[in-house]
Length: 290
Image (cartoon, rainbow, N blue to C red; front, side, top):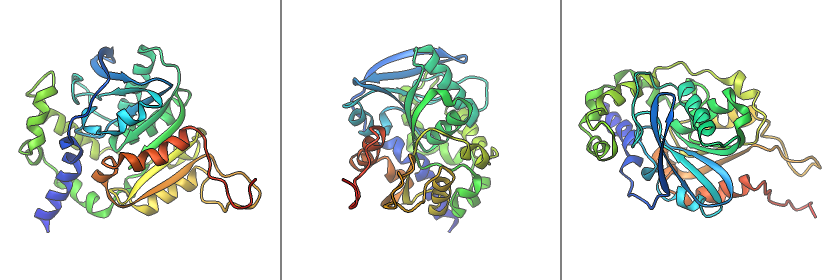
């Protein structure tokens, strides 16, 4: 049981990071809060900021970025200590990551944009909406929780057992060296990300105050429970009955079938089917609508 749990949680962290590299946009570096942040810009259209998950980078987000770039101007960035962005002497916390995104948007003269985050990037995007709401037009959150109680029990039980040694022996530890400014910095990154798992997370009151439209996406076998995704949707005004003459809530909930946490990002066609209509504010017509 313990060995199986180790494998499952390491897969949670490593699965997306092992994805095949995809064509990327124009690469740039810019100073953000003391680090050299790497980012890529691709496509044309309304601006969309894309935020990756833990242990990931722009390439390991897979095909979703180039697909989004077909209709949007995508700004994909790499977080502190990830990919080609330098690490700094500072903990990795969701508020820190959110402040980095806000500072990045200021640095590239991007007053406001739609934002799409996956996993750790989704939690950072949620904090961005809480701390810097004027920066976001529409928000897409894939595999996110607003409270530690929203994680699956198996994952919460494993967090105290996490150690740096578990991760440094994984294949993606070698992949880290191919992009990182400091090839020897992986153990320090792991240590910070393990500490991140221990950070308090109880944002219900803040989520309830969010005013911009939010699309919540989760797998039906995700690291976040289905009940938690539904609870978040209700906090944002969702869960009413349609076809009663009132407009639907601006926020939306999408559950991907037969989908684990790492499989969420590996289904770009399905993601696009949810994301694109939401960003365009397109709503399916009901039977009673003209």
